[in-house]
Amino acid sequence: MEILIFSDSHGRTEGMRAVLSRQVSPPSAVMHLGDGVRDTGALALGEIPLYMVRGNCDGFLYGVEGPVPEECLTSIGGHLFFLTHGARYGVKGGLGGLLRAALQKGADIVLFGHTHRPYLEILPAGTEAEGQTLTRPVYLFNPGSIGQGGERTFGMLTLKDGAVLFSHGVL
Image 1 (cartoon, rainbow, N blue to C red):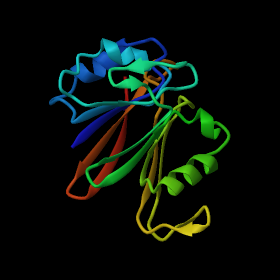
Image 2: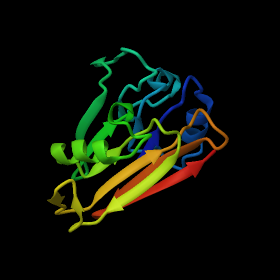
Image 3: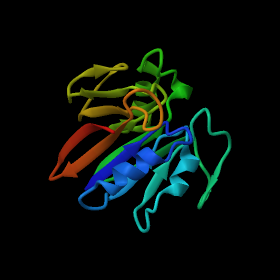
């Protein structure tokens, strides 16, 4: 399973369209982590599932299935995903609040945006975090910004045979 991850497109759809057009095979899902969720309407996803959360610049939006949430908790491939833009948790000043919320929800894959900077941190099982010992790895991932900045970046997550592999791409 391969999941494309975008964030912070800020009205610029060409980057997401370019990434999608360069895929050898269609992704299993696409995720947008806010600040430009309207931009996903310009993507020809067909039957590809789209997960999205709104960011601090999105306002109150409606998607196909109703209001676009600030957060999303979903299970995919045996993992519990926590999607958020990150502004609510002050991620520009540190990830403690985000990690605390993710652990309270039981998530092991945490996806966020807002900083416009690619980021990956893996907390191995056995790590002490927020007053608890992790029983399985927790992944914190930010794809960066597909719409702004010098390097427009995105993320790819591959789940295969129990392995979790994140990568960043540059447009």
